[in-house]
Image (tube, one colour):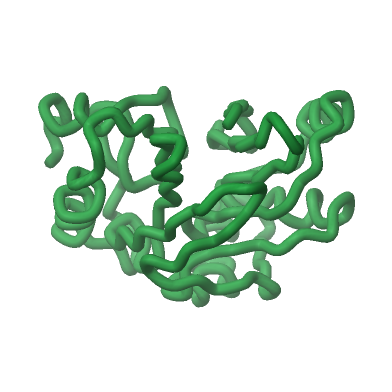
Length: 206
């Protein structure tokens, strides 16, 4: 798997392209915007988008969905507990920063569900805290975790939003993520990459 990172949107969200280097099938993770440079990269590399994965329903992770769907007929996945956020511009914070955005056509997934996408098994790990429906996507065969706004390098996601919970987030990290192998590469929704083993010994929040 080749992973390309693009900083998109007004909050500089990490949007990832998870590419199967043999087939060029590609999964788009957290498209907070759909800039021309990203579409151009996909075209220049002859990539074949297969799906969009959303780690949660906040606006800075979802506002590029419509732009990609204009170009590619692909499914959009998000955890079922963020259904309200996906459909409410106040809950997803888009009304605070923009004129408002919602998306109602997502496929809602459950904890431990396995999504077979681009030739990989991608496990849904429900990690509530930042939002009720925050989840991470774990690809065990590649030692890769897309952690969204649950786990950052030396930090964790904010819990001062409606439907956020500090205690739930800490439990999610400790009980759902820190049980993964230490050499798991973590690709967060903001800032730089990290490793599970590093965060277990250096993250001051958990």
